[in-house]
Amino acid sequence: MLIQRMRDGSEGLMAKIIIGLIIIVFGLFGFGSITTFLAPPAKVASVNGEAIPQQEMELAVERNRRMLLARDVRLQDIDEDELRIVCCRHW
Image 1: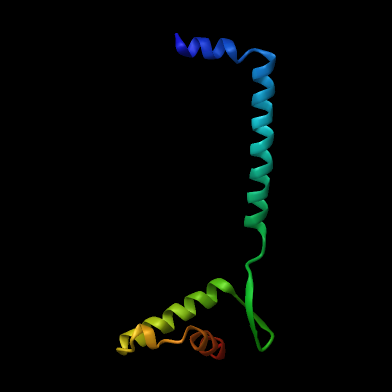
Image 2: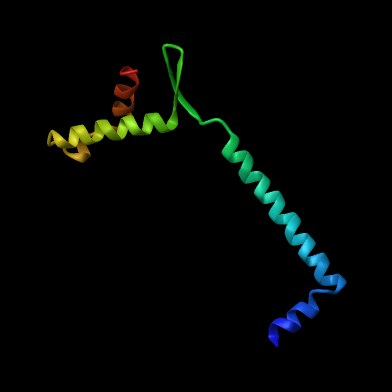
């Protein structure tokens, strides 16, 4: 009964306008998210003319951080900036 009332109410002009506006809004926001996925990955450094994507840099930093922690270096003693510089030297 309730579903039938909703269906009957959706046949009016006002309901069609509201549904059209919702479709337009979803379409515009959906288009924005598609362009985000198509954008090239951010480059954070360049070593010897080779651009390094942010994701590769973060993976290398995390790998080196874990190696230091495995060598019993305290987390407070690890300098994040120095770790990033060391990662760039390896490229």
